[in-house]
Image 1 (cartoon, rainbow, N blue to C red):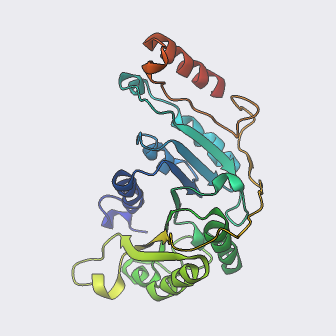
Image 2 (cartoon, rainbow, N blue to C red):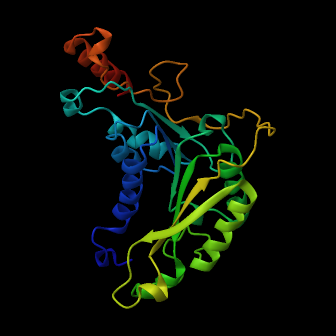
Image 3 (tube, rainbow, N blue to C red):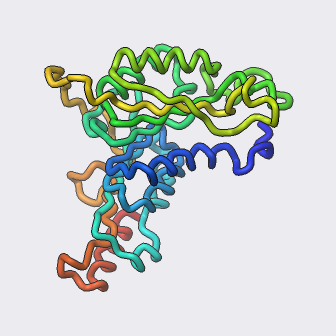
Length: 273
């Protein structure tokens, strides 16, 4: 793909869309499905309103390789926070249930579903919207109508893509999700087409922002506790924590002097590394 046609690059625009949403809505529990290199998580960790940040990816090796970038920076100690940030990373499939991802304020799935078979997309829908039931889910996927604008592109944008949907196909799937699981959806996107073509081809990456309908009554629905995700790393800070528990600087209101707070955090980084 000719990535130079987008400024900023398309992947940054997708991440910025999520960051802007977080800044406006201030969710406390945020999960990224298909977190890969943890690049979105690395940006979200700077938002102090987030108390729990979770990443899930099928490739545990890749997550383990990139997880150290989530550790606190030295500059974090210059502005201590009254909140703790817990970051958890899991290896697992988005087609499988895990109770630890239930009831989040925000779940994101950025350019993920096109890597699934259509049968797995159905399972993904049931798991995310029927079992995890986030208050908001942000789903992005390539818009196939944009593809003719890429010089020399034949077929899909990536060799691992199982499909690429038009806007109508994405809309059909999204509205079915809303009907089945009690959501409403807003359609938007990032990566604008050249002047005069936007209406005809749409955004390069199409995005659905799904919001759970509060009026829906699921009080009689019993969801079993399933724990199908596994550790990314054996380097757990404590054996009873999921994978990584990064304790960000504690508030001094607990009576700990600054040097104590720094020592605690540095020790955590040492054990994780």
